[in-house]
Amino acid sequence: MSDFVPRQTDSATDVLEVAPIEETAKAPKAIVGKSPGQLAWFRLKQDRTARSTIWVLGFFVFIAVFADVIEWIYGIGPTVNSPDLLDTTGQPLGYLGGIDFTTDNPSGHIHILGVMPATGWDVFMQFVYGARTSLIIALLATVISVIIGIFIGTLAGYFGGWIDQALSWFTDYMLAFPFVLMAIAVIPILNTRLEDETGYVTVYERVATIIVVFSLFGWMYTARLVRGQVISLREREYVEAARAAGANSWHIMFRQILPNLWAPILVTFSLSLPATVTAEAALSFLGIGVQQPTPDWGRMINDSLLYMRSDFMYLVIPGVSIWALVLSFNLFSDALRDALDPKSSR
Image (cartoon, rainbow, N blue to C red):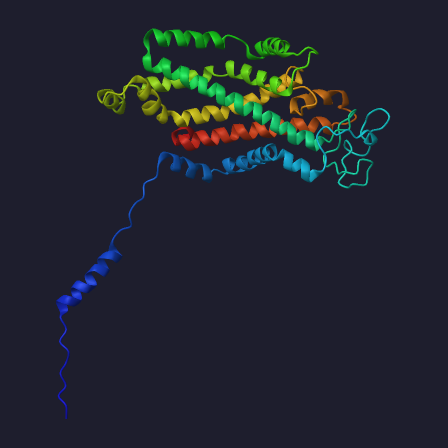
């Protein structure tokens, strides 16, 4: 008979082995902090209005960026004449301006938004390339004007004194000019200087002229906003610390103060963009902006006035497009402002 010897267990060792496991299980999870940008993006994603407008704006940006690809898939360009689709008076054949989703027509192409009276150009491709024209002009003009406003506003707010007085006076002086009247007066003069021997001005020169005029007369509100923000930030502790460390004024302005102004600048940019879209369409409507054959929504509205009764779809399509784009920008700007500054909605 063999002797049975029970195994001796060391209770202290077992406690030491179990204790780390229990401590790990009971340890609280680390709290991960979020930057102001991450918090703003989270609030923006929770906003239904912002999500809806992002889809609308994304649609317009998509067709503007991929207009050439859309033309290749669609099979017809924006300025391809289709006289066989018009009657003897220049009116589109068929219903609602010649809308046709089949290729069973003299042009052999579909026309999902119809064709233009008198020329037979496809309205859908005019719409697509018109979005590119409006967004390119509005984006470039807004970016340049915001940069000018940031520079002038930062200088005026930081240095103060006679520099602030001179720049503020210049800003008020520029604000006194009525923008529309100045654009009507300046753009034709600039285009006259750019004409060649035959009196022709290229499309790029016309677009550049509009962008320059918009930039020269669109920076003032940004400058006033940035000036006020810089005045409130130039005496902060981190600015004083930078001065004590020997940083020069340019470093303090554009490396210390300006990064803290991205939120109001972003809101200002998003508000200025739809205003520029509307102004560009208004100038083209008046015959001062982009000219044929370059597609443009404002000029489409101007051309459609002669056919309001016989072909109202020709007026509805560019009008609704401008309305939808500007409204989406404005709603997105409000949502962005609330996301960047939640207290503003209270």
